[in-house]
Structure formats: structure tokens, C-alpha cells
Image (cartoon, rainbow, N blue to C red; front, side, top):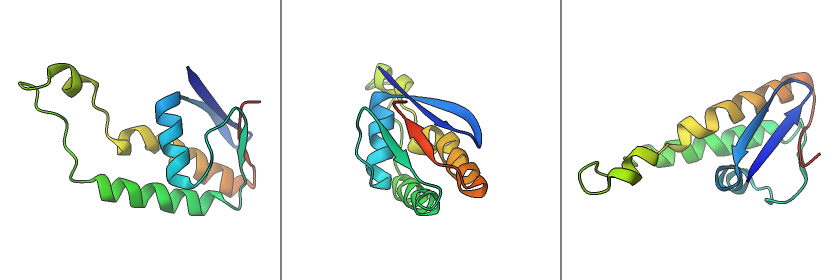
Length: 102
């Protein structure tokens, strides 16, 4: 399944459940059917995501020879989270919340 995040500040973003769960856990939100990130919470969420990206910096894709399927499927957090960080920044700047499950 997928989760679509919405805000009046920019276009919607859809993440697969596993990716949405990871991003929400990093920023301290529960993964649920519905939720909200307020404009006031967005700057802290951006900081937490950037910290997690820095911490993951040394993580490498699985070796193509040993695990070809896993290597092809590997997408680093930096890539998955970039559009979400942009959404958080736009929402904070516009004073708009981010909603999901609505």
C-alpha cells in the first residue's frame, strides 16, 4: 500500500508504506491511518531527517555480485526523504500543516 501526504503549500507526495513508516518514525510521528505534521513541527522534522541521512551516510548498497536483487532495489534514505524534506520546508514557510489519510 501507499501513503499520500498532502499540504496546501506544494504538490502531494506518495510513499510506500514501509518508506512512510521509516520517515515518520525518524521524525517522531506514529504511522497510522491518519496524521498531521504542523507547520511548527516541520523544522524539527527536517533536522531529524537530515541527522538520520548523515548517520546513514556510510551505508552502501548490497554487493551486486552477492545480492543482485537487493542491490537493484536499494534506495538510500537521502533519495527517499528528499521530496519529503522539500514538502516540510514548503509547509513550514507557508504555515500549512501536512496531512495524511484524509
